[in-house]
Image (tube, rainbow, N blue to C red; front, side, top):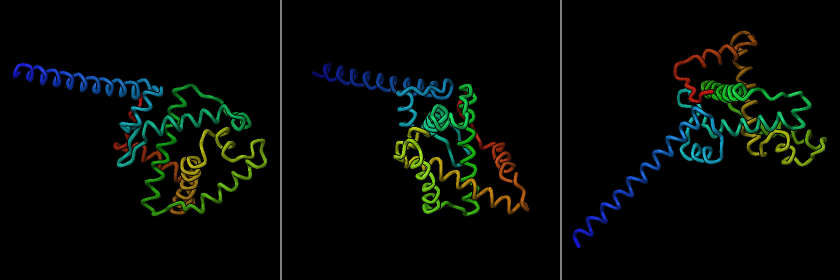
Length: 209
């Protein structure tokens, strides 16, 4: 009986060790697929979101890999949409697209940090006002339903369009105006500040393009 109990414990320990190895291997493979191959397959996306893997970091802020791929999806969707064709949007090479998307997301983080430092924010009413213009544009288009209009042309649902597109754009505009005023009307004040912040040592990009 004692031997059987010992064998059972050994079998359980062995099974636990195998399970740990499987998890470690899956994590290692996910990290490789995310950071060195920028793989956006469904399994990799799921694991990256589950472990909240970052695509880049800036101080206390970060761009998650999940947000990176979703934003890239939306940009790709727009370029291929009728709205994209109307403005002659062209699909860049994949590495260029990746860099452009990540640069944009890092810029949003920098603007967010500046806004917090200057106590600037965007109210829900400001977002609603601009969104009303988008609704009007949809009403006069071939896709008057706003949800379909946003998805067909921009690859976002209404909630994400408000939070991922309109609010960051309005915040950037407000920070731009504030910095310009502080720098005696210098229209390049925001670009200069962003470039300086990007050069800081606490800005780290993990993805390898």
